[in-house]
Structure formats: C-alpha cells, structure tokens
Length: 73
Figure 1 (cartoon, rainbow, N blue to C red):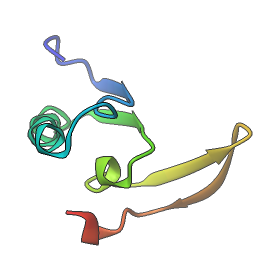
Figure 2 (figure 1 turned 135 degrees about the vertical axis):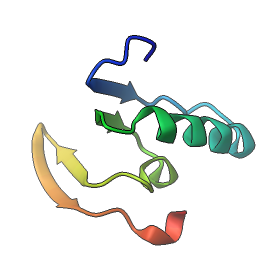
Figure 3 (figure 1 turned 90 degrees about the vertical axis):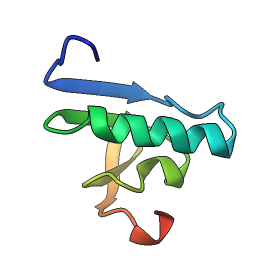
Figure 4 (figure 1 turned 180 degrees about the vertical axis):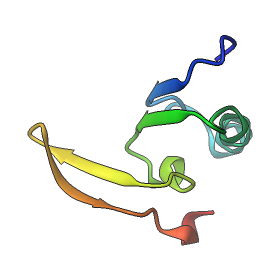
C-alpha cells in the first residue's frame, strides 16, 4: 500500500474484526483504493458494500455477478 501499486489484493482483510474496528478499517481502505484496481476476497457483504462490482465464484467458476446492494452503507 505504501508503494502505491496499481493493483491491491485484499483476502479477508477485515474478517476477524469487531464491527466498530471494521468500520475504521473500511474507511481507510476506501481512501487507499482510489485509482487502483482492487480485488477483494470476502464473505461478509458489509465488506463489499462500496465495491463497483461483485463476482461470486463456485468451483472456480463465476456463478453470479452484479453490483453491491447500496443498503449496506
């Protein structure tokens, strides 16, 4: 993140956090993700709320894709 790499990959980056800490981290990540391609792997829908696009994989294949529900903000 410090090198300003054009691609950022986050694998369950906030999965083990309480909801208050999760919000702080999400706010910080949102700023870091500006003008970067970001791949986020997550199980919590709240983690994906501000993403541009969501892909759901099953057995290595995309089974669903779409926009995140904006009600999670």
